[in-house]
Image (cartoon, rainbow, N blue to C red; front, side, top):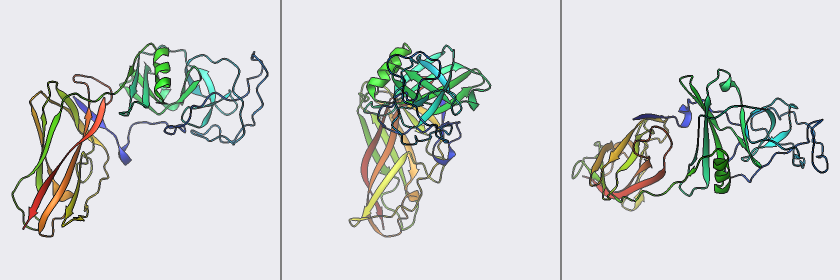
Length: 328
């Protein structure tokens, strides 16, 4: 299975940001009820229009806004033009005018944790493709929660994939319940992995290229599937990370960790099996001085479900080991 990661400056996927920020407090619908709409209780306080309300991610003008008292149905909405509808405040921050509701039945909905402590989530909704989807900005309303679109993609003009960020396990559970699905939480793999880095030679000459081999052995009873690649479109493979000392002093990193994502392939290590990969350590250190270099190597593992046709990582971790490189 071949996957394409788009990262750093090479992000090519269409991503429509609308002011969402990580770990912001819960934000609710705010604004006066539209004229002619029935309300319960006292009418909402009038809110002056801000010229920047129509911009994606626009910050509020700072006024204390009253919650909307008009009931709003759960579902998907488009972001409206300024003054078109009530302002809503996204869970991640930023206010948007709420436009018309989309009367659409999703083909699939996935709510998945995107960090190991299960506090941040994505909900991805697949809807039948339409030509104007890419030009729209979307909102999702579930209960008192308003989610702003994080990214939008397509599948050969058959399906539009809409992804919204969620902060908080309770909100994720409520969103999953509304769409009739379960939250896919992360949990650590149960197979222990034995990791070593081995230089290709016992000793090197100054400035000679130093290559090392990563070896990962599956010491458990279950297969381990992870992504190899996805950070290698740059001057070095940044799935690896190294730091080194010589005579107790840090060694300068002579390379760059900048990368533009890259192609990745899922790799599976069967119980008792071994995965190996060779990398040039000279892309990190010059090895110009003689001596015994103490190196700490790490390799990022993004675990995936074996055989899964789509979906994100189910766990992320670094595997690491120390080793020495001798320069004479």
